[in-house]
Image 1 (cartoon, rainbow, N blue to C red):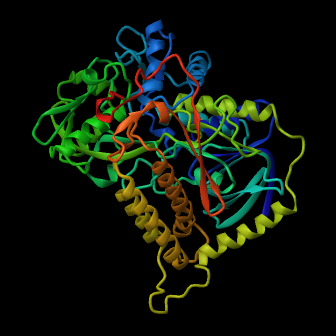
Image 2: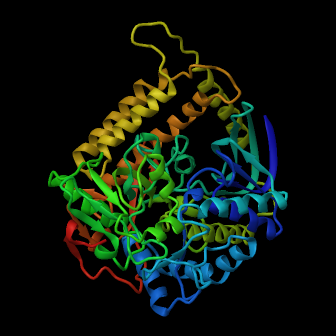
Image 3: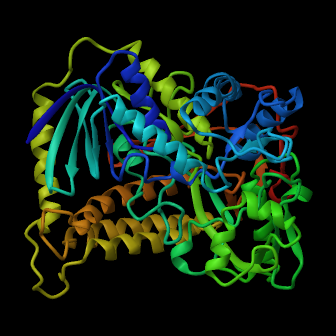
Length: 580
């Protein structure tokens, strides 16, 4: 197997990973970047519709800055966040991120007076050039920066394992170039995991087919702790049809150029959510939207699978045409964004939890492993904050990097074993199609089976019994179906079924850990709603819910978040009465 040496290997080609690689290069180190897709052209970062102007910059006020901190702490993090981290990230975004972006050519759309066009909400944001396109342009800039810097990029390569030495330190990884069908190993002094927070754990998700929680699974197997895996965001306002549009958002939050927002209607034509009316202080109150829809579903006025509608028809038509990229989606359905309602449904979105790490250094509980961006469980859904994480991880790595590589004979043995495991997944481990009850199963068949288990056990409305039943079904699937898994083709080159086989093992591990973590949290909070614990409990659960593997089981612990400037203001309260 080919072995590559570098100082630091970054896993993930989105906002956090690309910036980490660029900063490491700037700091004089030799990074390389591995992406399961195309760098800057896959994953969640390209989906960023806008970037937050969460500070006093660009004409903002002290109140705008305070509103930004409140939004992230309350509506986006549900008080499961270190507020000193949010303050540091906000300062960096104001003083470094925005000046750099415009200097690199990410030019924000201007209004008629020449000023930057922004939302009219207390927490403001800007777009380049239209709402729905900002991430595409930003990530194209990052890709070109990496190319200009000569930073090695290994694209369409899936990491299969983190390598460790006899002391348990992470010292590299193995990966499969699935275009060529070749495995390779990387020896590195540090690994930065930046695989994002959009994973397809159910059939309908904003995560793409290949986003199966790889970073979580790899770190979990390497002995790392996880935090708040159960905390999951959902969209309620995505196109219900066609099914392939499940990532396409009918944006229900503040719009650029107006103080209006979309309206969401139940089957009886009653408006049950309008951001400018129901949560004017929040930029994107996804958890409150989920609560309002859940109440409609419980009342029989909507379904999570549809039967409710979103409309922009009350918004000024010129604002929609000038700033909203979604207008073209309406047109493709034969609809007019200025006049028509469109059926919506729910879609699993970003995971709030992830790999446990220090928010001020991005170090994990395993030596040699750092994180950056959404996989680090610090804050959800902000591209600028994810990029901040990438820079912070790079600086932390550079300040503590060992002079020598730390691989040893244990590492070499791990490489040999991993090569055998990956090869066995390609050919089915010697399985045949004969024998009663032993028919081979295609990896995609098992993957969709896992999604079906999670749809029932881990939907928006949760209960302890359903989650325990889900764990039982996952265990049965692991025991009975994974040994029978065999790709339909044994081809080496661009064999997506081989890739699916690798994904299945990651997916089942991540789903199991997620359900274990969800059972441990005995309350409801944000979009996490348990009917057997239908209240928010800040006395016990305003904390990190930490889980790690322990032999064949798991160990758990809690860690209280530091006190911040913004507090919930109550100890325990009924779930639906909490406005975040």
